[in-house]
Image (cartoon, rainbow, N blue to C red; front, side, top):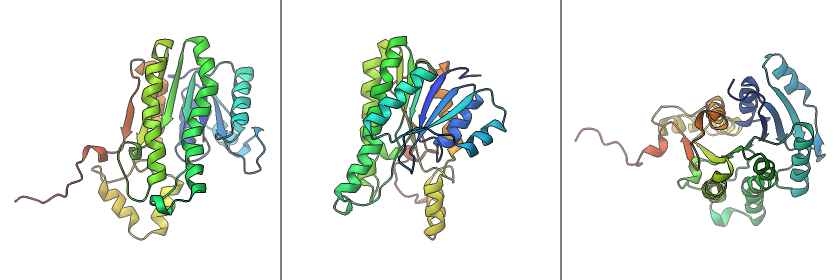
Length: 267
């Protein structure tokens, strides 16, 4: 097992890419804590009975627990870090996965929506890293995986706030990797392309022709799955890639390998 008894924290672990990542980490023997927002705005330990039953039925060797907090709120993240230290021990793997999405050109993006994206996608990564890094520094070991995107590597139409936030994570990852490498801490980011999560599937169902356009845009002929991204996270969290540091890893079916120029056939 690649993550046997590793203390792992995953933000945004009950939906999207986070959900299968929690499952894969537990399958690989991790002791995982999934941090998720609580619609009742009550931070602290939550018993997600449906999810616990689902994981228990799989009989995986690891263990998952669920904790409610808002990654953009400092007090709640500090309390979560203290909880992890008290209940599990020092965090060894942090996956900063929680994120928000926003479409629109700059003049269409309200200050409230801009702040919401920056608070979750950038401030959330900063706060979680800020409060868990001391635990990693004390043991001279740790792995941080940040959730960026191909949108943090290249530009998109009508997505200025999201692209700006993910671009910040891309460069934050590089800086953190340089700063903490000698402390035994690796920092990398994953940069997924379009992935079949709840948000994208909603787009497919609500916008005529959207699924075909997305699939045709990818050299593989289809978008990715959340499990495929989760598998990459397991690799990045494991000791199999101890020399991998400061990488913003595209997992995108080859879309960022393309110049974007149209195919003209034989001429």
